[in-house]
Image (cartoon, rainbow, N blue to C red; front, side, top):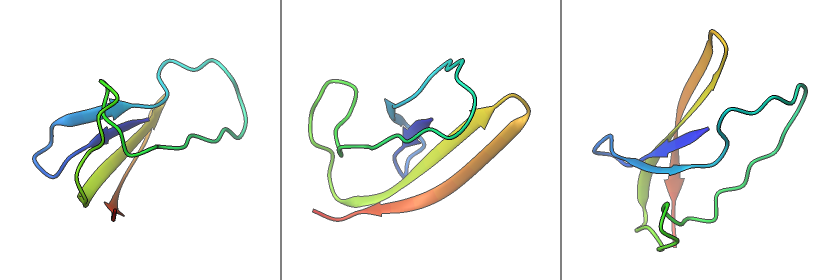
Length: 62
């Protein structure tokens, strides 16, 4: 599960290379890879699992 800003730059990777099956929960704390708060705005999250890929927009409001 990766999060990108409106410019397409990767902001954070929440889950990568998981080997667990079934339902999982990931929570984004609004911080980038270095632990810095990101600004309010539109972000895109991308979830990939095998051949499955889902991309959706989300809004972060502080």
